[in-house]
Length: 237
Image 1: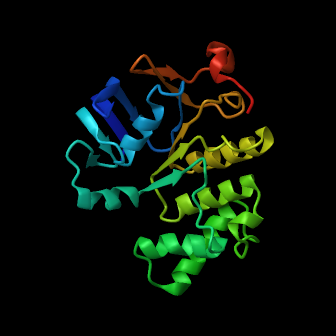
Image 2: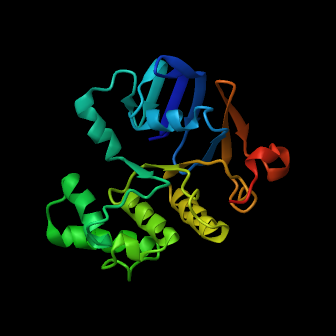
């Protein structure tokens, strides 16, 4: 697949109010993309259209060959199985350990063989450096460790696209850098990664394409340096 996401002249509305209009962009395999913008600028709405949580109001929007303007409700789970989603607030199940959290996702997406599930869980925990944490309960983990588990969860079904919504928002700067580094490595392996964030302080260390939401438009900033972007986006959390 040569294009993971392609939007052409797309309008996005929430409660009948247009938040973004005439959106045009595409993302290819292995791209690492920052999605930035002030609170209320539409970046979260745009991100949610990519996994069909928010419908597109007009235009042609395609993710992984799914037409988002006409996708049927029954096909949305098929789309989401091919996308890994990383949330700021982790959304781990607090009543079970790490292994059971990951197994729950595999069970929900059709995995049946116990040995295959155990092997895949071991693989993704190794990928995020958490092989010795499978027996831990979420509350026994630090914020950074929980976010690593969330990334592992997102990787379970070998997605072609990772969407990360403010993945460093609840973390200290050093832990945040480690999380971005993990996502950067995932992109280097060929998976497209989109990171919605208000913090580009790591742009020089982890360069990527920047899409900026402003004035109901999506502006492609290319691959800038910190110096060329507005200071409002370059903060240390």
